Length: 380
Image (cartoon, rainbow, N blue to C red; front, side, top):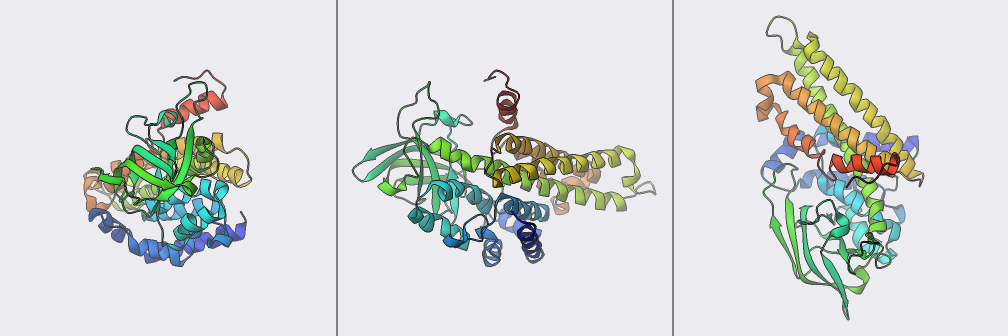
């Protein structure tokens, strides 16, 4: 990370938000249509290629630059979940994949020609990834995959999928063992999609079924059985990418609350002068700024190659709560108008609330901090 590269990303991202409107994003979400105009603009400015090495057709940069982009687009309300998810799904491939895998699957996501989804969560395992049941059995042609995944954003619209599957039986003594990471064509024969009735994120969520889906031998990333180790290179990134989006979205809500509170004056003076509203808005701003500092330090730690797990988890916890708090006070400030979708306040709430649940719920984040940071006994 350098001040120059961060400044360049900030300038490009702010230019993007001037060219792509929140109204366009909302219309695409309403029509369940991919925001192609946003995607193309990000490709043209090189923003899609952030964190992808230049030798593979990317723009380079680290997590700090990526988070600046997501915070700015979050504040503008024009989030591309395909980019958000793809940006951390490709991290394990860049770090552990072969040059051929990177060229085939990562480079297209940097140019805009490819879209990558993240195949991890399962209907029965939920947060307990160690107990996932999707299997990849070795055969003469490569790997035969059977099982299912759920809450997979944009699976049907994607071109590739990062998939974690079990390649050997679960061993309670080594819960992280037996899991392997694969990169594959999302439309491989034997893969089926069922759209879920979820209208929160703007891009469709899917239940994905694998029925004797044959993968080639070179679909395996790195060594067999080390999938969880590789996956964590993406999961710490995931928490921070979502954290930056939460800060941006929370500030968008607060911006709207402040503007409305300065003008609304049913009793002759602006409601922003009432401490009952002013203090909660001030508190929400303080929490957003404090959570941003933790988030930025986590990103710097990650970019230095150090263990960013503790700070990444803390950042996800704090930013998601601060975002939810900001949206809540924005709704209260707007009163009944806050629930009129034309005011575009209640439209922020489902996403803000979801971030306390996904990509990992805050209760599991607290478990992690309790066990791995405080050294307390395992609580689950």
